[in-house]
Image (cartoon, rainbow, N blue to C red):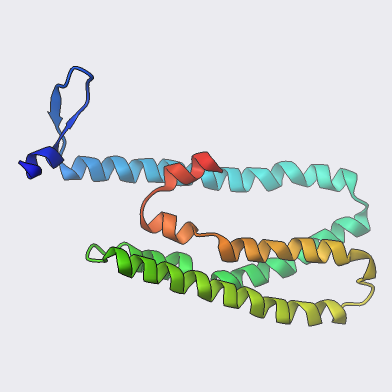
Length: 173
């Protein structure tokens, strides 16, 4: 009886049941994840393209260069914090024989490691800022852009990819 309940699901309010194979469910989950990931990637690319002309108009050339310099620098630290967890941890998370406690343990390990890497980044970033000449005017920009590194450290996108819940994330963003 339990097996039948899994295979049959009600699609109409009248209670008529249709047969849905596991392959059909997997194909629907896969296609919705691909669509949601495509939308998210498009938005991630479109936002900077739309924002760039506005920033170029509002900021002076010197300030625009400072924003780009710190964005480049912080981008490298963000890559350091991510450390490839989007691939390795997602691969581990998709194993079919993984228990709930093993998932929780993996989540805690990855997130704590990312936070340690973020704090190590602070220890490297601050001396670099002291080394750059004429940084006095741009301390707020330098610190605000570095906050992105902690955003990457606290972002559990690898977990969402592993449990295949992309549509929920895209619609909440």
